[in-house]
Length: 117
Image 1 (cartoon, rainbow, N blue to C red):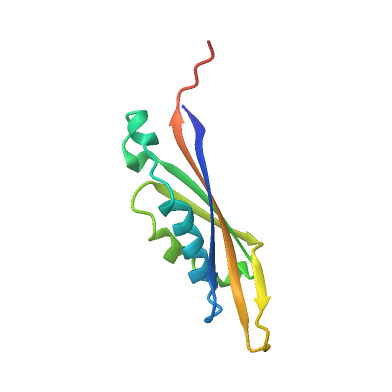
Image 2: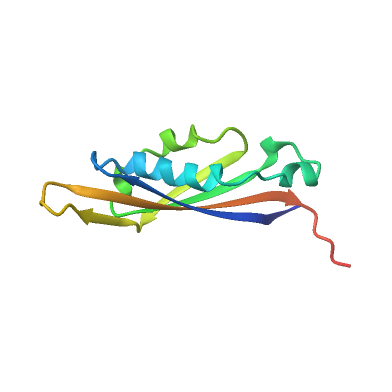
């Protein structure tokens, strides 16, 4: 069997007032997930639990993201999360804080036999 990429999804999320990097990351994941209705598992006759979901989150402060909280978002599949430097911190005009922007990339794969014919 070989891990075969089937779908790539992208999302963006923000934390406008609370400067919460986990909240912005969660919104980015939901943005990527909730804008699609994927039937890939069904098309290949796999259970949805067999989906291998690699998640990459970009935020300015990766260490401030609670990845365990993000794992709870996924209704099925086997997600893994990696948080990297990225996204944006936008200073508010009056200087009182930041708006946090997170970007998410989700790659859905399955372990599948490759046809070399």
